[in-house]
Amino acid sequence: MQVEVRHLRAVSAIAEAGSISRASVRLGISQPALTTQLRRIEEALGTHLFVRTRSGVVPTDAGRHLLSRARVVLGELDVILENLPVTAPPRELLRLGAVHIAASSSLVRHIEESLPGTSAGLRIEPSSRVLLDLTARGMLDVGLVSFVEGFVPQLPHRLVDRILLPRYPIFVAISAGHRLADRESVRLADLRQEFWVRPPGADDGSLAALRHACRQEGFEPLLRYDAPSGAAWPLVAEGRCVRLVDPSWPAAPGTVTLPLADEAQMARLSLVWRRTTFSSREVTSLVEAVTRAIRDHAQDNPHFHRWWEGFLRAGPR
Image (cartoon, rainbow, N blue to C red; front, top):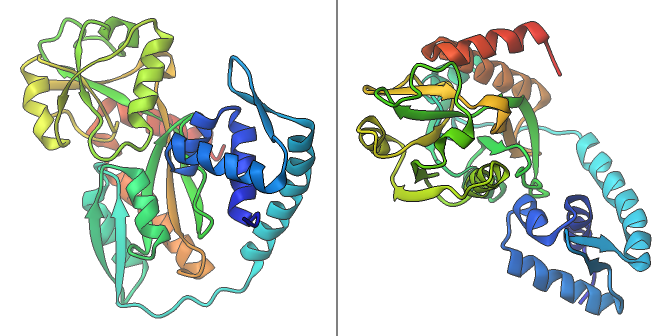
């Protein structure tokens, strides 16, 4: 086996994450698959690149040597790709994919206004990892993706991204009759006895992030329900369970959505696309369109509106 660029990216991801399991989330592959890939890389090179520790893995001397060279190669390659002139192909239909956020109802309108002569189709997909894959394979032109902080995967090498919100809060939805419903925020530890709705769709790190955050508070979440986003609301309203939600959604009847105290769950919202899909002018137009769509719905939830106003006052981060 010859060592390829994707192998260098895998080794770099493992070193940066400090563990194979965390690196597998970044790379968007399973832990066993990444373990097998690392073993084959080491066999091809004839040396071990990492040693296991209690907390994860650390590079060997050979691993550190490879990493020092690999980062130069990957950095130079990224510079070459980023600076290639791009001539976007003409299009009549822009294939847009987006996570399930309130702004999705305004995305099509704002994008079509920003790119005259272009019609936009829209696919709502609960899993950001699926959106990354569809965009990388050319089945979508652009994806609006969200990943929980600490569980952001490495982009497929065909894609580039633009971060729209570097850190925004994830809220929790509870019944309007819940004992905590009149709070300004809810501590995750206060929900240790509640049943949870599992994050919908293919796992994109959201479930791992929920479990990690709960374990930090000393408990394991009681995952009782699996339901698409809309179907879970009656269960929450009846007080049977709680669930994490995008903060821009207004509360469904019989529920309230509240911030989690101490920034227990923070996420990053980004646009992703294949490098040759859009010109720099079109990228600027897309970013402005999506930002306007988010702004349209910032007031739908008063708690999120206060956060949004603070974000705008703070300016770029």
